[in-house]
Image 1 (spheres, rainbow, N blue to C red):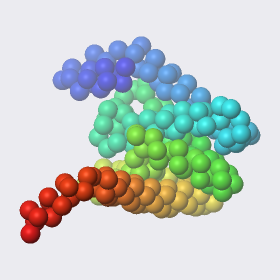
Image 2: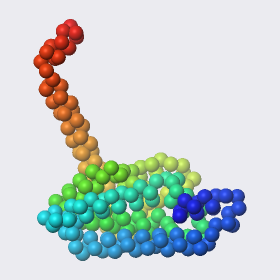
Image 3: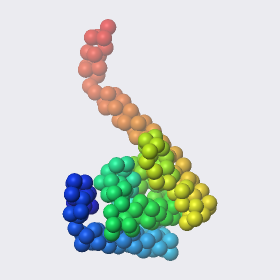
Length: 222
């Protein structure tokens, strides 16, 4: 639907954007934000549903949650993508469709499972989030105006939670910064662990080759 609106709005005759379609789009967006807020409230009140892996479905629910959050972040934080372009069109009827409401809802969930939980819960959440193929650290950096957004052209106003001082407290900003630092370190450790595992696997494969093949290669090298 957003794609259809964007295509219609960028035609020369912009007055042909269907107002009913705009209304439906805005309603769906508001509903999505509300559902994310309900999810945030649920995680705040009963985080063990996702983080207590003695429960039979907790790990599965956490993985599904990570997939959802990564998908939302990737679509909303990408510079000049479909969502970003429609928001910047500032079409009448889409005033509520903006980066702030949906990103704040997602950030609230992330902070709850990555910062406000106990050490074991934070570690589990980070591991699951990073293991999801759709995870991009850039999407987390975007929340604070870092990464690609900071390097882009200066003629555009880029999103940053730091700009919403009337709605976000200093403590909340610090928690988001703590979350970014935590995920950055966990991402580095995961990358290093993967590299070591790959090197170890390669070395083991070479070690297990037949002796006559190894000797043949040595003779050729000499």
